Length: 311
Image (cartoon, rainbow, N blue to C red; front, top):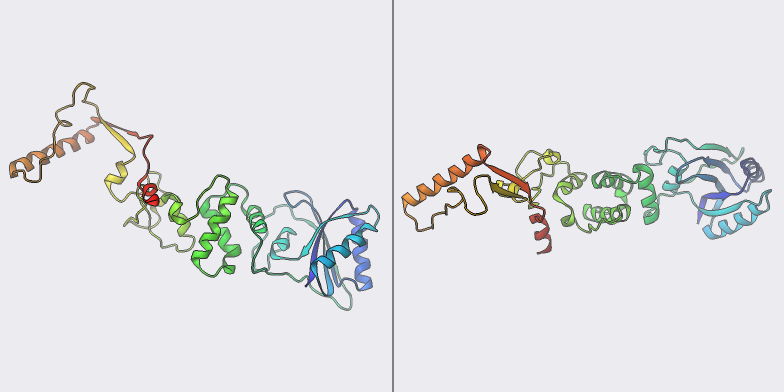
């Protein structure tokens, strides 16, 4: 049972619909009436908004309105009739009842009128469970078609976060909707999200979340906010170098150079062997410093965080 409804109409002269609305007000069949024309965009069309004297059943209102509008000149067709929700309230170009401003740059054309002696407002239904299709359309209306996961999560939390009981449920619902929004996305859990995105996703809920290693996905003991670095964030030199193939410029296909042919001393080696091993390591470091090696990205490398996810 609802008291205010939105009706999307096609095939009618706006002046005819406005006259019909005025007659509804005069006869007391409606205590508030608005005619809204949206000229462009995904919500393009003509809408009627009516507040009745008392609440009525949704299907009954829709059936009665279809019959009444068909009697008007041009026989206007009702595409759908629904209760006025927060989502529809924003489509009409009216500020959201929870303070969010509509992002549509093209302001709809609106004419409205209330009953002279018994005026009523337009009652907005704040749905506890917003249909998934409405959620998706609402986010697309606010962000467009190509928002990143952190941008999507921020808007999702702003629009629907209060309807979900805890952070875990919010994140799960957000990822589920993002996979529909972004075709080809298969992330079902946080562990599926690449570390370079996971940090920014988690910071939507907790701005103090630390950075994660781009290779293994573990938390990195570094100042927050560095995850946007073009060089990446790594927990160790091993992770930093994991995705590269290092080749010595002095080696040939037939023979390794003296540095690369050196082997580490075994655990039972003497003190002298350990000194020689350390010298070999220092020489290898010098080779890197003086540009005697090349580093190329390994096309077959799979980041450690993906392997850990499947284990």
